[in-house]
Length: 583
Image (cartoon, rainbow, N blue to C red; front, side, top):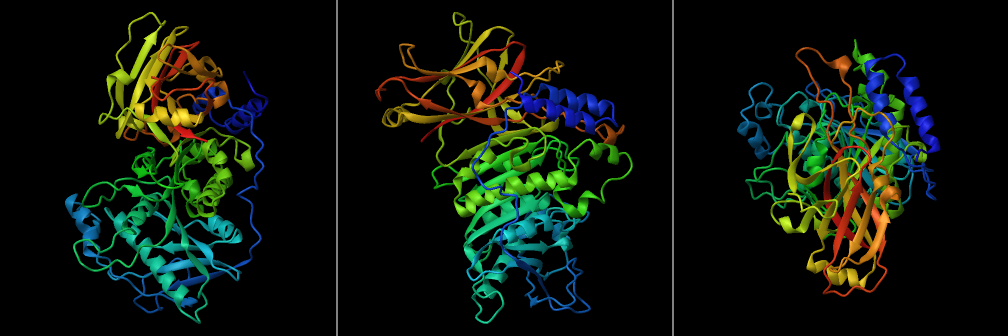
C-alpha cells in the first residue's frame, strides 16, 4: 500500500537533490523504498513550541584576572563568581593506560579549572527543574535548546569546558566538571539572599550533551552515584537527582572507568544520531543504550533514534555554518538544513524531557514512533529503538541464557528446522558491538517461521493479564537494488499458539509500522583515495503489537510466539529484544 504523504516526501527529497547526481541516486532510491505510514494526529501539545515563561540571561565564572582561562561567554563582568575546581587524579588513569602521547589528558597542566556557564533563568516564584547543556570538542552552540527549555519552565545552564578540547582520554574530566557545575548551583540555591536562592528544583535534573559531551553526560550520571572519589576516602558530595540523560551524536569509549565500560543505572536515556554524520560516523550511542539498565526500575525508559538525513554539525549552532567548506558544501546541501535539524532536536528532546521530568507519559508516542510531519518533524526517515521498565524479556539471543530449543526457523512448515544463526550486531564498517541478534534469510514467496517459546515464568503473568503488548526489534540487513516501496511487515503475521498448535491470537503486522530498508548513506563528496566511509549499518527498530488472547490460558500451557514471513522479494533480517508488557 502506498500512502498519500509519501509522494510529498519524495517530491521534497528530489527537489533537494537536483544539484547532485550520485547522491540523488542513493538517497532517492532509499526514499523510494521506504513506505511511510500516515502521520498520526496526537492530542498533545507541541513540545517544540516556546512556553509562557519569560527569562533572563545570566553568566557566571571565575573572578576575572590576567590569569583567567579564556571563556566564550564574555565573562568580564559575570553576574556570579564561581569557585575553581581541582580535577581528581584518578581521571588520568585511562589516558595513561592507553599510552596517549600527543595531547594526552594525563599531561593536562591546567589544574584547577574554572566553572564558566551561561544561564537562562525563568521568572518564577517556584523552583524549576534544571537542564545542563554540554558541548563536545567544539564551542558551545545550544542556545536554541536553552531558550526553548527556559521558556517552558526550566533553569538551563550551558557550560564552557573548551579548555579540555583537543585532548585524548578526557571525557571523564568533562563529566566531572558537569557535576561540579551542579554542585556550585546547589550551593547558590541554598544560599539565602543569593539571586538563585530557592530558584532551582534539584530533585529534577536532566543532562544534554553532544559528541564527546554526549559521552560525558553518561559518565556524569554514573559518577553522580559514587559515594567517594575513587582511590580516596573523600566524599564526592554528589548524589544529585539526575533523572534523564540525552546524547546527541555521542562518542563512546573515549573514557573507561577502572572497572570497565560505562553502565547507566536508575536514569532515563535517549540518544539521537544522524545517518550522514561525518564525524561520529558510527551509531556509537547504541553501545551506551545497551549498557543502560531500565528493567526492575520504576518508570524508566531508553530510546535510540536515528535520523537518516541528519549529520553531526547541525546539532550545534556554532558548528553548522562554519564547517561547510569545499566539496563538503555539496554534501551538506543534500541533507537536512541546520534549521530542520534544530527543529527535530527540539521536538524529540523536549518530548523526552516532558515524559521523564514531568511524567507526561503520552509523549512516548512521539519517541517510539517518530514520523515526518509530527509536530513539524521534517521529512525524513526516523528509526526508533526503545525499551522501558515494563518490558519483560522473552528472548534477547545473548549467549548467557540462549538455548537453541527456544527459536526455530521452519520453511514451508513441513521442512526440518533450520539452524539458528546468532550473530554479533555490527556498526558501520563491521565494527562489532556487545549485542547478539538472530539473523534470518527470507526466500522469495517462501513461508518462513521464527518460533519463540514463552518462558515458564511468563505463563502465569500472561494468564492473569490477558491484555498484553508484544515488543520486538527488527532490521533489514540486505541492500536492495529495487527502488520500489516495500514493507516486509505487510507480508508478516504474529501468532500466539498453545502446545496443540491452536492459535490464541493472530494478527497481520502491517499496522505495526514500516520496517525501513537498510539505510545506505552517501559520503561521496567527502571521500578521497585515503578517506572512505562505510556505506551503511543495520538499524534495529522496535515494534509494538497489542495482544488480547481469545481464550483462557492456563499457566501450565506451553505457549509460543510465531513470526511468519512470506516475503515477495529476497530479504535478510535481524531480530532481537522480544518482550512482553502488560497494559
